[in-house]
Length: 237
Image 1 (cartoon, rainbow, N blue to C red):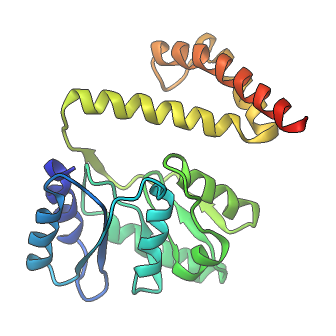
Image 2: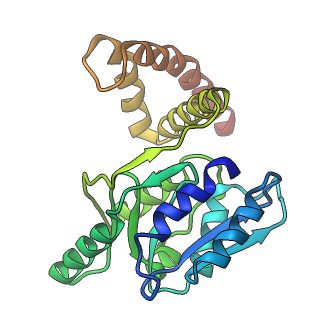
């Protein structure tokens, strides 16, 4: 990620008031040049901090996110910025929108947009935390909050662009993310069955994804569903 990290973080730091916002990065034992990039950013921006951790195979992305929330100094947290995204200057607008909704409702809640979310730090610590998993940790937490009536989802996209990376890395990440997301959906009890049926029928319906992707998902979902069903039977014995 050292090839995109500096551009991504600078796009965030340059649009936020340093007196009102801090930007915190957790380096989870990186072995590329990310640490040097973080040191340069810290020297340039007074409101930038980073935490370095030793590599631990047992610590997944979900727990790393918990570490960032625990270390945050503010009352509110804006979650989470990917290291390969360049953000247009709309984050402050998203924060202002959240506070307007907060005042109008008079209640604590977490606001989730298309790529990022905001809420009180203590709310996430109390009703979270993120599960110690590598994929779908954010969706899992959002479901927890939704079940408690603490989630407000808004179809709000903060403008960004994905920074270019080697095609081999893009390809691997895209398919890994797709597989993990499907596996997570199928594990959701009754919702998993509904998801299974939806994916089977997807190639025969119009959708925002290409026909090729919809066919691949339909082919993948059958063995995945059968595998999870067999695992559930084994646990019941």
